[in-house]
Image (cartoon, rainbow, N blue to C red; front, side):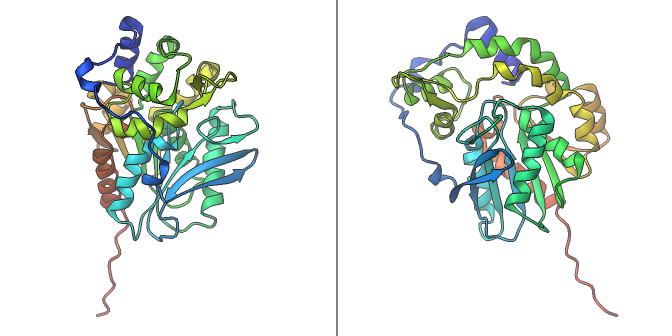
Amino acid sequence: MDLRQTIFKAQHIKLPPLEQSETDGKEWSPLPWSLYFETQRTVSVSDTNFNIYASGTDNSGPIFVLHHGAGHSGLTFGLTSKHIYNSDPQSYTVVAPDFRGHGATTGNNQNDLSLDRMVDDLVGLFDALFPNNRREVVLVGHSMGGAIAAHAVSSKRIQNVRGLVLIDIVEGSAMDSLPSIPMFINARPQTLESVESAIRWHIESNSIQNHESARLSVPSLLVPINDGKRMTWRTQLLPTEKYWKEWYSGLSKTFVLAPTAKLLVLAGTDRLDKELLIAQMQGKFQLEVLPLAGHTVQEDLPDRVGDIVVLFWKRNRPLNIPVTRL
């Protein structure tokens, strides 16, 4: 189920739960980040203290930087990150930050999610983590995070980018969906009784299809209300509406022209707009379709997404061919 189908469901049938038998007996308690990442740290860049989850930071192989979408956190990539890292734990580095206004990241101007600001954050954070970097880099972005990653690659401000991966974001369908997104946001409960009830809501509403991933990622999306008895959303999405159009306008062209290898992972083929369809037919990027996933593809099918990203990297990594003297 893709984003437009999710919005349609919210608009028409108020995100109903799954059949009772599918959720009975399941555990709804949160899972710790430490099961999926080696470290958690804070890195200050400009006016923001970024919370960062990472594994393999001392390795010397490729760096996979994972940018979450609006309203999510770095833990949306928890299971996928673990799968990527475990593919080569002696070489790979995986980094999944909470970006501005999300998760455990704090600082000033946290409501400024403008495109330029977010690209500056990504570039500044990368430079702080990997100064004078000479290692190969793969940028992965889900939804809004894909737009940020694409523009960062296009700006050529991060060196040695060997791959750009966008997950379930296409300019045409994103722009078409913008008028319906407020209705989708308003269909969510504005307050929740507990973290456990929030995890259960995400599964029963089909917002996340993977029970384990929901137990990991959902707690980072919540903050307590002043009364201390209820929870609400860490990131209030409606105030960011003024930025939605600039995130996605021109994205297809930016992606197709990005000076690196490109991969687009979608939940359905109906997502391709005309520009991407032509470019895909011309072989300008790799396309992978996972129709069993919802919009949060990396949560619903983390191992599959991890495998796709690793194989994409291997297919596009530079070859070290020894020179033989005659």
